[in-house]
Image (cartoon, rainbow, N blue to C red):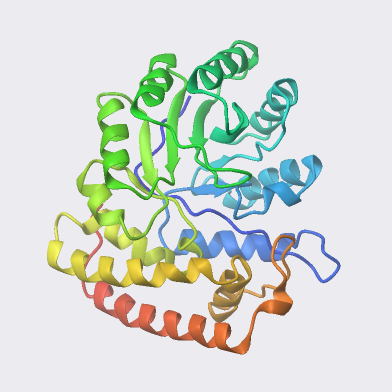
Length: 311
């Protein structure tokens, strides 16, 4: 099993053709764009990819296409973990592992209902692991849908003890939680990637391994710079953090349509088509907000480009 590298792992969005099918030609260009921005790897078939709105066949084909288009330039991890029954989850995860993904990312809320305890979570996870016979690294994603189930330090210790897990996309947005999780995983290969832009710099200082979130679809290279240079250039890191934290409020606009619009500005021929958001509600004012966000981002890009990346 491969270890997950520190850095930036974009939560990929899915492009669609006018007829609503997946636009693979645009997907290839999107992957090239991520890689040109310097990302560490790709997180495919996640909530940003609209995995809950894709069929099983579409989820598997999407993962295969991402791996094919990445062509070994960066690793690809994939989720698509949406089934309700444990038996279906096991089958689904096996099929996703068979796509060749470097890691299969499970969704925390699939192993227990909202009202159920962590003991139920552990019990179902143990059954899953006993029946999941693929030699591939696993991870977890604290996906907000259909409800957000956060892991705590005790559960992190349980995951570390299995020796199977190496990735967590953390959506707690709370530094106390992040510190506790990082401490619980200390000395292991289990790494926490923050999905929250506002707490990113503080989380890196606390031992987080990097960023995996929505805002990589607007300005991935700024996150790459911050994750690589926050220690060597703390003054500029603070300035950049102030921008990306504020910029991330765009997430509460009409995502992922607004990200598709931003990527159009980056020269990628996205249709403004989503299966989870009504693009008809993307107003002229929203478009202007995205354009202004991208313009300010370009100014920060010029600033950080004056500084070299650190390996």
